[in-house]
Image 1 (cartoon, rainbow, N blue to C red):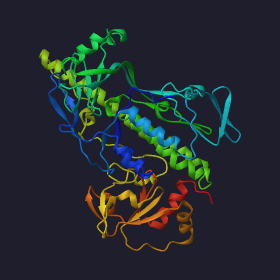
Image 2: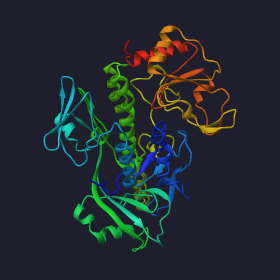
Image 3: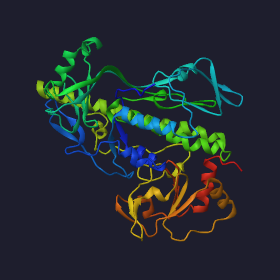
Image 4: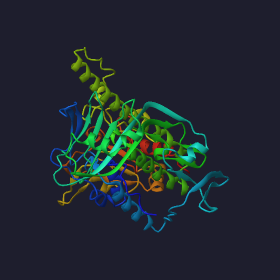
Length: 477
């Protein structure tokens, strides 16, 4: 079957492109993304679309790539499918339905198509928000408090349009809406439905065009897609049943206000993808796979909660304007909600549980966070992204030019995990900055997903750090 030709997700984080870089595909993926345009920013506006606050778009961020990347999903999916099916170890069964996924004595049995079966040690069900797998195993669903109907409209622009490049959350008391500057020549609106409105009314062409009229003249765009969705905020109670895992929308759903729906699902895949080979190759115990849920659930929950906070901030700002119109005192701002807005101080959360040194995790540290990736220059004058030194797997990064000799038990862990030893000596940052942890600490262990496992301190040597890594990974002996 062909790729689904209509857009859904529109934003890819630099963190995700960084993971493609790890597999030699970073530049190819970046080439599919929208470069930063004049006036590119994201923020909040009043009913007259007058800018209130927000954040400017940047072409380079802490992950070594453009932080926010607008893309066209059909184009991006075509690339991903082409890459997947060209891989010698991938067999794609397209256009077939999975009827059941069952745990067996030695793994998983999947029934699909017209009675065919497939067996494996593990299975990952990325079967969407309505996930038959989640329902079959009666996995609970935690509602995080946002359930509202919205009309989503995607258009292709024509000459003469008057649409700017600033993505806006329009906090209009009469109708809250979102305008998204997706990849040229496309744009998106999301209109919150009022209580008396129905999906049938909202999907009438005249209604859609009347909502877009204040933005650009009719005839300057073609509607690609119009659909009514209920925006949900929820996470699953379990992400693993035996040897079966759920990921993506099957495990979590979020309102789109933070642009993190697909990114969160991709983080699921990135997380479990480096752990499965360690277990399958007998290097680590099966208990390592339990950290998939403990790491991803809390992180996804934090991001869904953040998106809900943005929705609440939009409602609060709309209510402030309504009170101004009617000469009423403004509503009380609850729980410093403005900090949830773009560029207002709230940042991505760290990994708070799982395979990191938990006693080092804090809001101002580096452990549990992604290692900063600058573009660096070596003494020979070569310039490259720092991750190019790390390789695809585990790495020890140290400030020291000469690496120590390790005791036998520590060296055995390094050999078993094929940990690469990397020195920052002789490197200078030409764009971005080396991670702040190296200002005070000699060395750090970086996981394959570029999360900092932990770093040395005055009371924690590198030898001890490596042995703690082995313990956290349930390393087989």
